[in-house]
Image 1 (cartoon, rainbow, N blue to C red):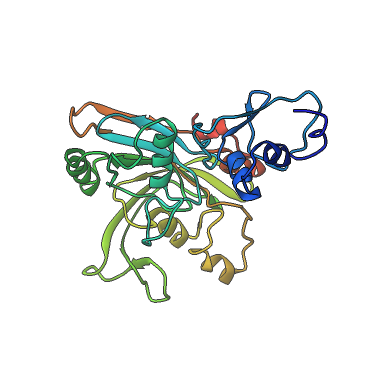
Image 2 (image 1 turned 30 degrees about the vertical axis):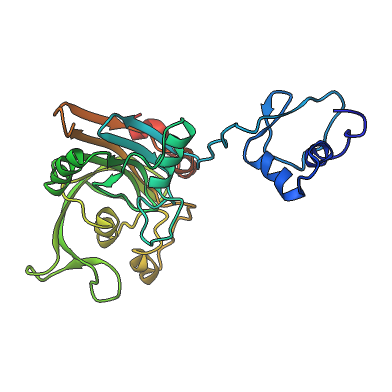
Length: 305
């Protein structure tokens, strides 16, 4: 770049050289990763140019992969892909036009790696809540889908969660029948034995925190919001809970503020759907989870990692 460019924006420097290009087109070259400044990818078209800098245009460069913090492909082969899903991301689209889901993150990762993102199907075999982080599995073939569907339907997969719940939580085996509406408009347990679905949750306290308990939770069944409901109905709603927390307000008890739901799918184990070989994956809680945990006096070591 020459003296005329110094002090101006990268977009202005590009437009001087790319006659016929509009400002929108020039800015898009930057935001899609087509521009290098001193050899590094430049995404900000408003960056000011300094003397001696070198600008390079690479029209065929791929758009950089931008994924939320906490996303990673933990395991993948021809039949299965397991990811670490961040909190706040839906497992699958719940509306036809919904984007930014875990499935979209997988395809974006494939695309960035040079694979045809839509050539390989993704089949849903289980879900975790939008506000829960951790391990989530998809099948890539119909054969794997059928086998994994049986694994999760029969509750033979190993699933352990790390949960931070209000109060002093004791070890327990919690069993109830869950319904979509317990009578106040939200999911919960019913006393009617002929209604709802059986749900069994095993809770093991790991560490006492300030006003809360870090727990290791194992699912024997896998119902919607099962852990959240069972702990809340015991008087111990999860920290960060926004739905199953009414009893805390009714009792006038203080609720610990948190930017996210403190529930993390830390372990997932299942037999490979084709070979039968055991697969066991573990992932520590992400930074946003650890920040809340540490604010309550806990640590990553308390989680067993």
